[in-house]
Length: 303
Image (cartoon, rainbow, N blue to C red; front, side, top):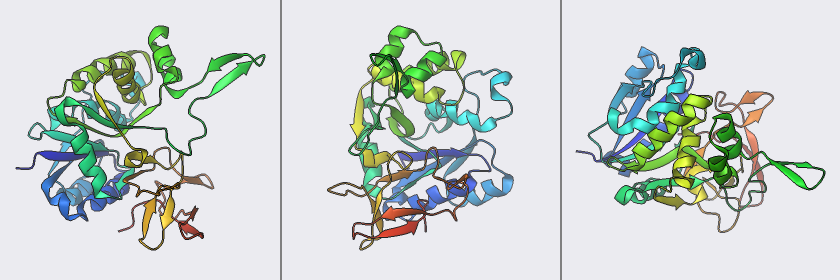
C-alpha cells in the first residue's frame, strides 16, 4: 500500500498541463512508490478515461465550504481554491500529501523527497516566494515622498477579504507563500487551522486567492510549524526565469551554484503576443544557458 500521494486538480482547459505534470512524475523510477490522485473540476469523460490509465484515483472536487453562487458565477474550477484544504477527506488512505498545481511539473525527483521529508511530525512543507535575484518583494505608493501606502500581495488581499488591520499588518511585509506546491501529513493540525482561516477569507473576499491568503495567515499569524524549503522547490517562472544547462539538458537556477530546478511552476503564465504559454505549447522565450548562449525554449514539460 502506497503511503505517500501527489495530488493535483484541473478542468478540461488545463488537461494538457495536468497530463504533462503526470508524465513528468512517472518518468522517474521512484514514482512507482508514490500514488497520484486527481481532483476533477470539470474534466471531460474522455480526459478522465485517459487519466485513469496513469493515476491511482480520480474524485470530483466539491465546495467543501459553502460559497454563494454570486461569487462562483459558473466557474467550477474555483473549487481548487477550497478543496485542496481538505485533501485527507478525499483521499483518506494516504499518510503524506504533496499538492502540485497542474501548471507545474517535476524537473528533479529529489525535490519530491524533500517535500515528503519536510512535512514529518505535522509540519507544513512549503516555499516562500523570495530568493536571490528577486528585486521587488512588496510594492508601496509613496505620498509626498515620505508616507507609504502598502501594496504587498498579502496586505492587499487581507484588506479586500475584510481581515482586521491588526492581522493584515502582520502579513504586510512577510515573504509571500505560494500555495501551488506544499506538503502536509494526514493528521497534521495545520489542516484545521488552514480550513478555519479559509472560512474567514471566503466570507469577505474573492474566491480566487482565498486559500493562499488563508495559508499565509496560518503561517504568519497562527504560527503553524513550517519547514521553509529552497526556492528551487517551487520555481515561479513569472518571477524569475531559470537558465538552461545544455550539457545536462536540464533547467537550473540562474545564479551560482546553479542548482537544478526541482519543480517548474508557470503560475501567472509566460506571455508573448497576448498568448499564455500554459495554453499554447508553441510559445517559446529566450533563455540564457550556462554555456553562455541564448536559446529559444518553452518552459513546459517536454517528454
